Image 1 (spheres, rainbow, N blue to C red):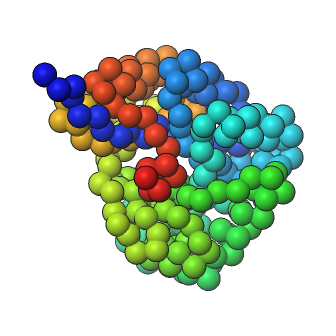
Image 2: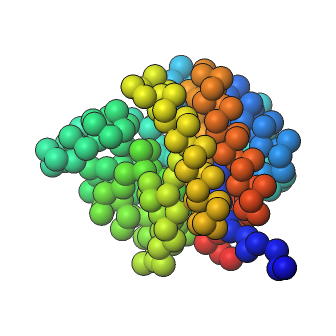
Image 3: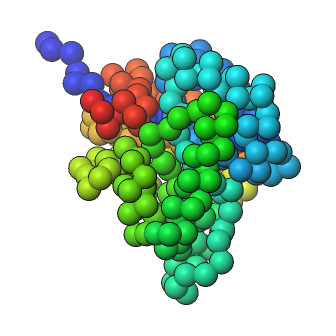
Length: 247
């Protein structure tokens, strides 16, 4: 009997910044223990109670070391904050779906370019180059998508897919993530494990998104790691976004 066909899956660590450095190290330790490369999503400007990313040299060194071990570094917005303006319906989606964090959901192309360039400049100050972009909340306006292509990004990601730039193709890959503190948190944790099991059985590519706040709930950490372990045991091939789009 031939071995089961492998399938790719991507693990991403969100909201990487000086204010979340401890959580980032914890997730990296879990992933390195399993030999699972991840895409680390960096917030370059001040976030939470911390400085801009280049202002934390210890974290910068750790990110370079992580990249040397096979993890990918990618851009995750500029300040990871909501931006006023835009159509009423877009503001409503931002508020309801992502708790107001959809920084790039209402921007024009010019506005998006300014924020993207500012983010890239801060990362360059830390000696970091990136090829990909995951918008906060996975929400990107048409203007943002045009700006990403114009600035030479290789891909961007939405909640259901990985989009190669410029112009595709689109790789359908649903993302599984937790919502700590939300109603139905425990049911959501079970759903992550069950969905990962189903996707793995079907050999369907998928993604698992890890957030700093997940670590405040031990059950959410256990569920996320169980989902990763299920994927690996079923023949899943852990990869980064950049490796996926360049394969």
